[in-house]
Every structure is written in structure tokens, then in C-alpha cells.
Image 1 (cartoon, rainbow, N blue to C red):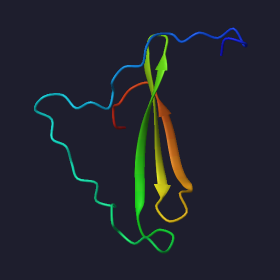
Image 2 (image 1 turned 30 degrees about the horizontal axis):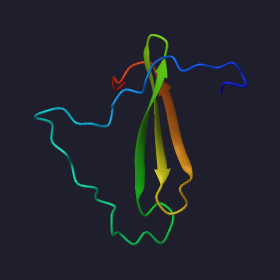
Image 3 (image 1 turned 180 degrees about the vertical axis):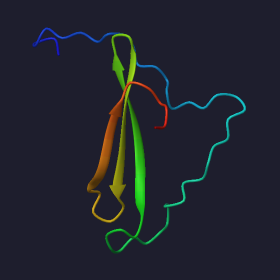
Image 4 (image 1 turned 90 degrees about the vertical axis):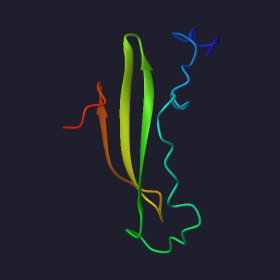
Length: 80
């Protein structure tokens, strides 16, 4: 980054640390033998740091091929 003249906006926030009182749900796919496409889908939410907050990238992945089936980018965590 230094060679390209880029700087981080601010240190990473700890977005993966749960707050007090929040439940931690089990990872249901662990140990599951996924052998064919569409057997299990997985989701992922990625927080993208921006100058005035975060952007949110949500992806739905096929468990067997890890192919991205769908994705959306949003400036809020609201469900539409």
C-alpha cells in the first residue's frame, strides 16, 4: 500500500466479537457431507469499511461448489 500511496482510513473494528447478551448460534454445516450442488447453501455478510460507516456485502454460496449464487451490496443492514 505504501508504494501505491494508499493509507488505511482507521484501524479495523472488531465486528466479529459478540456483545453481551447476544446468542452465539451453532455452525450447522460443520460435519455435514455436502456431495452435490444445491444440497446446502451458505450465507456470508462482509463489512466493508468506508469513510462514513460501513458497506455490507451479502452473498449466498453453494456449499458444494462454493459458487456465488446471489449477492447484494447495501449501505444498511436492513432487510428489504
